[in-house]
Structure formats: C-alpha cells, structure tokens
Image (tube, rainbow, N blue to C red):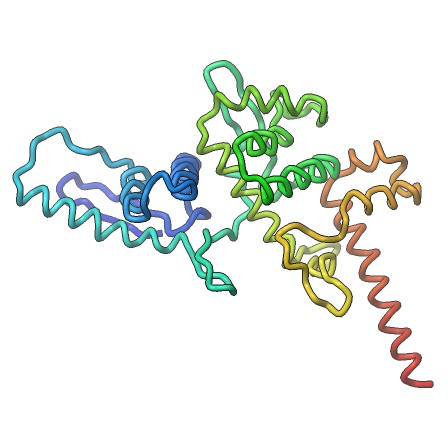
Length: 288
C-alpha cells in the first residue's frame, strides 16, 4: 500500500499495489477497468490513469486551470499512474498477467435497485462440492469462449438471495439474468477471484488437525509433472461419481451437498495413501 499525503487538504490517500490490497469499492472499480483493458477498449496508459482516478476517488476539477497548473497536474497523475504496474507480473512464459494471490471475497454482499445477494465467504469456506463442480465447468468454458454470459453464470452459482438457503442448480440461469443489473465490476471481479482461488489450490497448504497438508499432490500427473491447464486435472466429476460409488458420503446427491473443503481433505487422504503405497512398493522392490 502506497500512502500519499495531500498537504493542501490535509488528507492521506492510500493507493493499493495489487488487487489483494483493494477495499471492496476499489476492487470492483479496478476489476471493471481490467476488463476494459482486456477487451482493448482502452490503452494501457489510459488504463493506468483511470485506475488512479478510480482507486483514489479523485474528481477531475471543474475549475479552469492555467496551462502551467494543468501541465503540473497531468505530470503528477502520470507519475502516480506508473505505480499501477505493480498490479501485474511476468509469468514463466514471459507473459504479463494480473497478480492473483488472494482468496478473500471483496463482494460478499451485492445489491442492485431491487435485490440483494449473498456470496461465499473468504476462501470459499462455505460452498458445497456441487457448487464447485458446476462453477468449474463454467470456468472451463470461459477458457475456451470468453463471454459475459458465462461470467454471469459463474457468479450465479455462488450468490443467493437467502444466504442460509441450500444451493439449487436449477435457479442458476434465473439468478444470472438478475445479476445483469449489478455493477459489472462486481461480476468480472468475482471471475478474477475464482481464477485466483484456482491458482491457490494448485499450491495451497492447509492446516488440519495439527498438520500441514500440501494440496499440490491432488493435481500432479504421474512422474510429478503438474498439469499445464489452469483447471485442476483430476477429473472432478469422475472423482465425485467414484466417491458416490463407495457410499462413504452417500449417493451422488449427498456428495454434491458435502462441504467443498471436507471433500478436498478426503481426496487428499486418498491421494496421500496412494503415494505412500507406491513409495513402499518401490522400496520393497529395491530391497529384494
């Protein structure tokens, strides 16, 4: 976070250095501008300048400035705008991408003029396995065909008018249609959150019953080569069906209602036992 002091008005302004540091309003505004830049509606230089105005809630003055004052103001805004570069990073392939290292939901409650919806808690702690599977399918469609309809559907999987009501996949289409009245920065911002959550899952270490569990083993191929796709490659739907067949969590309908993190820990336990068994088998053969 960059702290800016404005002596003339005795104000302190705080400029976030990435999406994680944004507050709820800033996150929605930044997400909207990131979308516009992604769609090539604005240049990168204009994107940076607009980010400064939106993040700091600066108003373009109505008072007519002298040429010298205007030049000074433009120079100051431009100098600040270079700080927006910190929202991006270079990946392993040399591609510039948004920094996504957060799992906190900046839009837990959203509203339009008619309705209010409640979204998932930080870290998607309160979602079900079925919600995640449905969202993952939509997310995979977005990788192939990036359009706004899929963005609304993705958000609709997780947002409900009654927070305590169970997830109903049949209502997703209706909810997606209502969400079109919500500020689009919230919608695209949720997509960015889900994408960040996907990235987190590939390397997450969670603390369970006094132990740190490395979830990356869930997404390893044979030979420990990781999937190149951003989407976990363990065949989530197929895994869910196999779990249902075991009867441990009951039929498929009950599996889908199980808490997401409970299921992830269960899958981790299965994969860990499998890896331990293979390691023991390898050691046994070497000692023969």
